[in-house]
Every structure is written in C-alpha cells, then in structure tokens.
Amino acid sequence: MKLTLLRLRIGILFISFSLFQTMGYPQSKMKEMFVDSTDNAFDVGNWMLNYNGFFPLISIITEPAVDNGIGMGLLFLKQDKDALAEGKHVAPTIYGIGGLYTFNDSWGVVGFYSGVWKQDKIRYIGALGYTSVNLNYYRTIFTGDELKLSFNLKGLLFLQEIAFRLKDSRYFVGGKYTYFNYKAKFNLPELPIDIPDPERDGSIGGIGPIIYYDNRDFTMTPNKGIRWYLQYAYNDTWLGSDFKYNRVDAYGTAFFDLIPKLVMGFRADFRFIWDDYPFFTAPYVILRGIPALRYQDKMVTVLETEERWDFARRWSLVGFAGVGKAFSNEKAFKDYTTAWSVGTGFRYKLARLLNIYWGVDVARGNEEWAFYLQLGHYWNSL
View 1: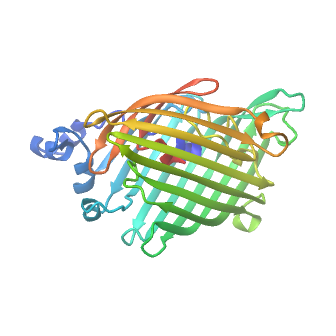
View 2: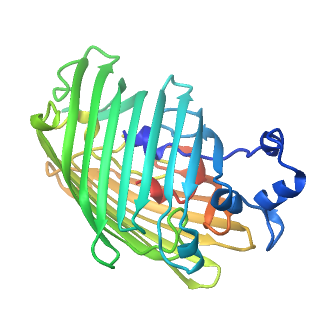
View 3: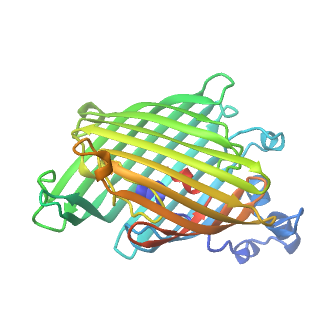
C-alpha cells in the first residue's frame, strides 16, 4: 500500500504560468504570487500561504519495482501563518487527489488528508485509494536458488490515524486503523510452499496504538530536529481481516545544521512481523536504488544518512548512503544479503517560507541504477 500512496516519488515538472493567466490575473499579481521579493526568484510560498494555492502536479514515476510512468494530481497545503512568523513548530495541513500509470500496467488513484487541528494539538491522517500494481516477489527455495515471481496486487485501501499532543510537549499518542481488500494473482503455476494459491481474494484489517515525537523545524524539508515513530498493529477477523498477525514499526530521523549551509541527516529503521500474515505485507528494505519488495522478510533494519549542502541561496547538492537487511531467525544474521545504496542529487528551494525543496536524485543499489524526482524530503514517505 505504501508503494502507491507514499513511496511513489512526486516531482513537479512544471507549474504553468499560463494556467493562471487564463484565469484573468494581471502580470503584477502573478509576480506577487510566484516571485519572492527577497531574491526575485521563482517561489510558490506566497501563492500557497496567501492565495489558497495548490501544486498542479505532473509527476514522473521512477520506482524500479513498477517501471517508469506518470502521475497527475493536485496538492493543497495550509499553514498557520502566525505561528510560522513566530518560528513555532506547527505542522501544515496537506491534502490532495491524484492518479498514476506505469509502463508495466500498474495504476492507482488516491485521495488523502493530513490535518492539523486545535493549534497542532491534534493530528489526523485519512486516505482512500484503489490500486492495481504488478510487482515481483523474491523467495529463496530449498536448493538455495532465488525465485523471482511476478504477481498482480489490486485492491481498495482505507486508512485512519489520529494522534493527540501530550500537554505542551512534542510527544503525540493515538491510534491507527488500516483496511485493505485485495486480490493477489501470480503469473506462474508453480509457487513456493508459503504461497499455496496462485490467485487469492482476501482482506487485512489492523488497529493499534502509535506514539511519536516530532520537534523538526519544518515538516516537508527539515533543517534540524528529531522525529521518531513507534506503531504496533494487531490484525484479526473482528477488524475485517482474513489473517491474524502482529506487526511493529519503529523508525526515527534526526537533522543537524551544526555547520553553516550543511544539513546532516540520519535515519534508523526497524520493522517486525509475526504469526499468519499475507506474503506482501512482510516488511522490506526501503532505500533509494532498491526496488520495493526486493529484500523482504519477517524483520528489516535500515541505517541511512543524507547530507545537503546549500551552496547558493536557492540551490543545494545532496549525497546519501544507506544499508539495510531483511532477515528472520532461521539462520545467522550475517548470512542474509546486505542491501546497500549510494547516490547524489540536487535541490531547488521551491517555497522559502515553508522550506519546501524540489529536486532530482540518482541512486545505485545492489543491482541497478535508479532515478527519482523528489518533493520534500525522501524520508517523509516512510
């Protein structure tokens, strides 16, 4: 589900001035909306904050697991301007709709709302989408050989999450419910023993508590601050699931700007699933340059770093590297394949007041190169 809702890279290829000129805006108003008076550079911050603006998105999808493709949509963002002017940490409300199609015939549509209520005392996330994606499932068989099995996964996703701030702290506690009604179909007649049916209809429904801490200075592209997130999910029949299983997701990111014009970022990630779960729900290594589901097992751990050098007022260079491993308790940890990724890219500060960056990344993983268009920070998709 995260593949289609969160991890597919959203990159802005253009924001057309002619679109708004046809709406009757004079040239002086266009400049006020899309030119930052501090440096006369193209900027959408004023448009978003003061004109109820939106990002019209035309996106190139570059996720190796589903091939290249295109996505289109509208992204809206609302921010507490008074808190922003005072330098307070208040997350924005973000919502939008969109659709996508890739060259391996994967497609999907989604609508989502990430709301900040009561002066950031309550945070809510809701999403509804439908997807049909063609993916590969990797499994090592008894001979030691690795099978690569192609399958189609389609279904309806419904997600609800709400969290409440603990007094005036940066801690939030709440709960999350996820439901996915799906149909999985493999293209090969012979399957591993843990996948007995080439075609199966089913559903998963899970609920559980969440707790997280967030003191980042900006949500979309942080310069400093820490965010860690812990979730436990229990799936059972009374929640709409055909399976009974448990899952824990724990991850954190930290950003430091100790050196002028250099932002250092660090990420740690651990995920664990157990009991009777569908094969595609097992956690997998999430790194640029590594296709989704490529390294997948009961447990996954990832370490990654990214540095951003703001060498000019609007332009930055980034470099990143990470390692990850999917494993279980069936053999020694060192015997599992270590996934690795390195890469570089550039960023343009698209909205100065909101600190939103847009850019391009090129990454090399264990087996292939990958190209990404990125709006905001890559780690926001976790």
